[in-house]
Length: 133
Length: 133
Length: 133
Picture 1 (cartoon, rainbow over the protein chains, first blue to last red):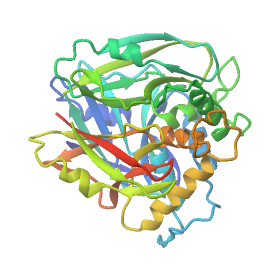
Picture 2: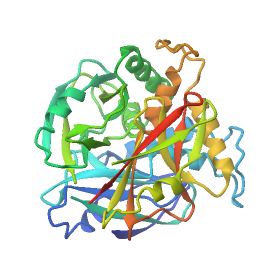
Picture 3: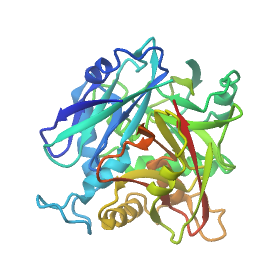
Picture 4: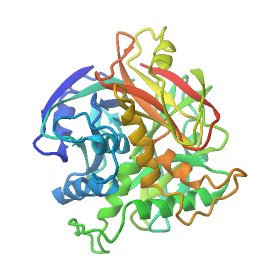
């Protein structure tokens, strides 16, 4: 298992990490798939279009509409304000994604990229990368 | 890794592909699980009830309500009209699902089927099938 | 593949099953990840914060707001009332999650727990646990 470190800049931000995670798979030796796992509870990982950056922006805005900051939230321990909706957005996208490998390379579709999803605030984050046979 | 080819008929359509993906797993030789991966950015894959086709229909309608076509979308490059909401629906369902195998057969629950989720329009689509040990 | 048995108490309930699934992984012998699979169509599994139980409560409430019981549902076969929204909530959270292992232990983040998600009613439920190499 390898760890990748990231820095996010905004409350809700999709970050294209495709190249970084592909680089972490240099010595996969015949692995059939790679697991990308986010060890945080207010972040996630998803696959979507990398070509037009407006797709990521639309996804950021949609996650804030699907889960509304104004709902009656109970978890309010965070000193920077309630982040309960961030937790829900994390579960909706999932904290993990599994991608098949072909000759050691991510078998992504032509338009697909892997995106880290920040839902909390600018933070230091990690992604665990695990090749599977 | 095997590739399955599909044709979809409607803008938003759940297609039961359980038999097709089980057939692709004929020679899994002791694999512990099978990964189904959708290499598209406006489609997904999910598991839900196969017995009553109205469940799939409800799911199609719900995905269109959860993500509204009328929101203020920025990604509008598609000549057939904006498909930004289709991208969001893809991330909500996920482009992949991993199912355990028991004696080479999908260890699905009694009511479970595997559904390809079209969110864009009638298209030629693919699903990658990867057995894992 | 091992089976874990659970009992749920409420219509919509997140149940922290982290200790139970870790115990089921006692003899993983160098497995790289563990798959947790829910063989039901009105339940799911997710990862989120275990420290403050209000996060799980917020998630339960949010799933009932994101998918509204009052929408015009078609699948109504259940004698206890329509559970079509429960099926949609199952697909939104997913019926499976894959977690990396480090020395046979779940490589969860500090605040992460694994939660079974009941979306139907108090029921007897199962989770399949499959170690992967």
